[in-house]
Length: 218
Image 1 (tube, rainbow, N blue to C red):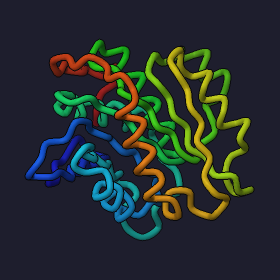
Image 2: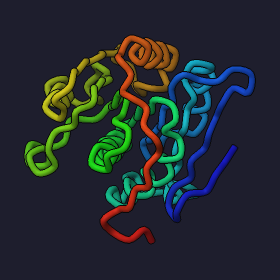
Image 3: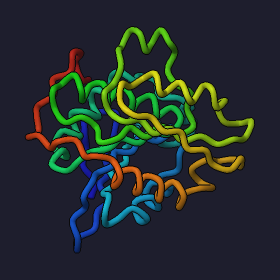
Image 4: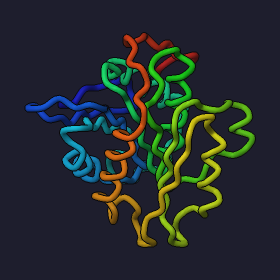
């Protein structure tokens, strides 16, 4: 099922019609990630976890950019679209450039007074800069960082600094040093997400709230 959200993103829901999920996972891809990865991830996580992958319209077609251009605007739009899905515990997953976007969405969720993310998963991305962390403050939700140990991946020390982005718990998970952290370890990543969500204490479910971004959604 596809549903349009304002201007620059699409939210795609993949679900099991025979058995309701216990969690939802909003996925923020790297801008060059193939959509098939998140469809495959959904198949591995169902029926326990419903997957809500985003696609950025600017990443479609030839000559696509290699980075997310307007993180703040996309974070505002993503949060507006996610507010209707908070009847189940909602976790966030971001890969590379999408990890920082997921981080900014998590901050908006906490500021809006709505549900706190069940867990923030960040994959293949170094932590935000110290200046960024000081300016924006710490999250309260759990963070789980996923990293490869190849030279093409961010250094382990840079990934471990995600622990400074939250006052909650932090875990670092390392995967074999092959190119393509997610493509090469899809089943292992799915198992990790499943186990982490089931083992973590779920945040209380609150009634959905209307989020009004500070800036205008174009």
